[in-house]
Every structure is written in structure tokens, then in C-alpha cells.
Length: 492
Image (cartoon, rainbow, N blue to C red; front, side, top):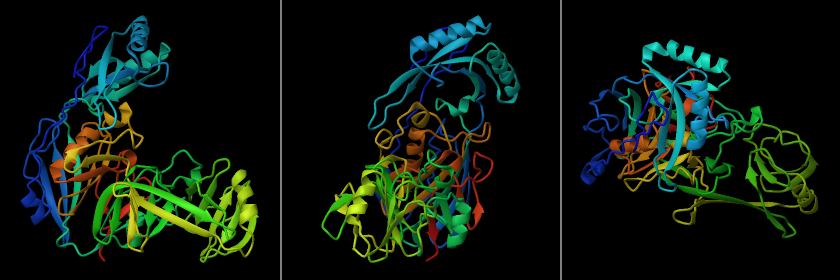
């Protein structure tokens, strides 16, 4: 990738190194899941230091460190849009404002690399100065002066950029051998769908050996509902959140795990033969939507509509004004607008309503049987498919510069050729301690560990790994964050 300085001073190479790794030995994959002996796959491929703990039969836990700190700080000037990057002409205009304020800017060309479903993107950033890790206060002074001149700026740690770095990296890895592990895998939403809860809490309540955070949760809804997963969630064979069509997910059953894409449909059929598709499960309702709420929701239905309360057999116990809790042993069909009209016409008291739920594996086109041992957790982005890097950022809604190129804490899940499970966290946003990873680096890392299939789960401040009731990584928020769901490794 290229470097271009358009206005004096600082010039920073915008480059992402994508290392082609040899495919893992088929024979080795069939024997066991094992930590690689090769050099660490990121940066200058340093020799990692690692410690291994045998957690229980079939589960090994590795603490890995690699690389060293050489990155420092710069001041980034924001564009009129509020973003830290923009078109070249916009960046040049912002650079002129910086010069007028008495500082020397650099216009940096940044190439967001291509992924499997989106081409590369070229953008421009305006930056001022470069300081070592220990001189952040000097960067803060320059930022303050620019703010006083009327510019919007922020101080950036260069290790977060996603460009060339030496690290360091602080990684935790759990390897679960499919041949010898005798427990099972499960998803947990904690005490309710609506409420956020820490992985530590969910793992302790379930008696889990290992737990990691699951997929994204909805931060754009009411505060008391933000535990709701964004994507498919199946717990114990019950669909508790609908899929984002085509989004990557992990399907767990017993002690097997596989990665695929999931679709869900919920069809409501009245006793009079009329049918309608529900728009969602256990989430806030938009105008004219029909939403299915289960007893796991843990919050009241939205006000301003109609609720049809169903018993376990689908009998309508009654219609009521919405805004009440879901009683244990019941489900509620909630509608407003046109959906409320449908309920008033086709969900009469003592009628039977059939709710047909289909969870489909989109790779095979087959429905998953909703048995008590079935669990599904939505991922955020596909990383590796059939042993090759295949990053599906656009399909999964994450094809921005911030998501693809920048480094963040990551929670990663992979499956080896013989069906063994790999869970990993890469801590980040801790200057001088650990830099995290971008999508390409995360994919390289999972291939290095032996994953033939891999996905990115939620990351950032949500990244958490718990082993034997102990939080083993260092969340970037400084404390463990409440999340929507978790993946748990159970002893039975």
C-alpha cells in the first residue's frame, strides 16, 4: 500500500501485511488440536512466550504474549462530518485550517483493504505530530491548542490504526479436543433476554468450565432492553432472537460446534386459517410489527398496542392492552397498528394459535431441529472458511474503515478439521501493553491456531474470557462489561 504526504511534516505508511500461512497438516488435525510451534503470525512474526494450563480432560488454556511496543501518539483532526477520515479534497481543506492555526499538518492516505464481499477503499486523514509512548502529554498539549483554535481533534495511539506495528499482543486461547472432552457446549442469555449480564455471572450460574462473550447486543434500543442479541439466538432449542439474514453464526449441539449462516422465520397461524409472519422475537416493536415474546424476555411488552397471551399449547388466554410482563409458561404475540388489527381479528379468546418456528442453515438449506441440546450464537463477521481467509464484513454489516482496518479487542471462535473448538481473546486498546487486531489479523491468527472455520464474535469492551470462575483477560473498559449472551463450556 502507498504513502502520500500532501501537506508537509508527518508521513505515515498505510499498510496492512497479509501473511499467507501454510495449510495445517491434515494428519495433525486428525490426531488432536495442538498449539502451533511456528512463530506468532502478526507483526514481524516474533517468537511468542506462552504458558499452558490443563483445565480439565480435553481442555487446555494458553496465555500468550508476543511483540514489543514501538508505537506512539499523534493528533488526528476530524472532518466536518465528525469522522476522522474523508475524501482527499475535504482532508486538504481541513489541513489548510490546521496550517492557519499555526501547526504543520500531514494528509495521510489510508487504504482500507478489500475483503471477500467488499472492495478496498481509499480515504484520507489529517494528522499533526508524532510522539513516543511516554510523551502523550505533549500530544495532549497540541490537541488542546488546536481545540482552542476551533478545530475538533483527538489524540490517537498509532498501534490502534491497523497499519504496520510490532505489537505487543496479549492473547488467551482455550483449545477443546473433540476426541477427549466429555462435556457439552451451550449458549446463555443470563437471567433474561432484555438484561445485560457479565460472562462471569453467566458462567458461574451454569457451572461452566469456560465462558466467552457471544455476539453483538442492541445498544440502539431502550436502556433496559440492551441485552437483546443482534442476530439469531437459540437456547435449549428455543428461538429467543431472530436472525439477521445471512449473518455468520455458530451452531452448538452437545459437544459439536460448526459455523454457518442462519435464517429464521416465525409464522403465526390462526384457528381460522389466516396466517402472518412475525417480524421479530423478544425485541422492541416498530410500527405495524408483530413480535413474539417468550417468558425469557424479562421485560414488559411495549405500550400502545395489543397483546394476545398464549398458553403452552397455543390457546389464547385472552387479549389485553400491551405493556405488561410475560407470565411464566406463556408466550405473548404483540402487535401495534396493522399487526394489532390482525390480532383483534384472528386471535380471539379460547382460539388456538399455532406458532411455527423455523431456524435454517443457509449453507445446506435445511431446518435445524429445535431439540433441547441445540444452541445458536450469532457471530459478527465470518473470518475463515474451509481453511482460507474469507472475511464477510459487508454481508455482516461491518465493512467500515473502523471495523475492517482498525485494531480492537477481539473474541474469536474457530473449529478445526476434526471438529475441535478454539476460543481466543486478543486484548487491545491498552497502549504499550496490547494492540488488539483488525479483521485480517484476526483471520490470520485463527488459521495459525489451526481453525478451518472461524468467526469474530463481539469485541471491544465486550471481550471477556472466564476459566474456572476467573476472568483471565483484561477488558479494555477496565472492568468486565455486561453483554447480551455468552458461549459456555459445561462439564456435562
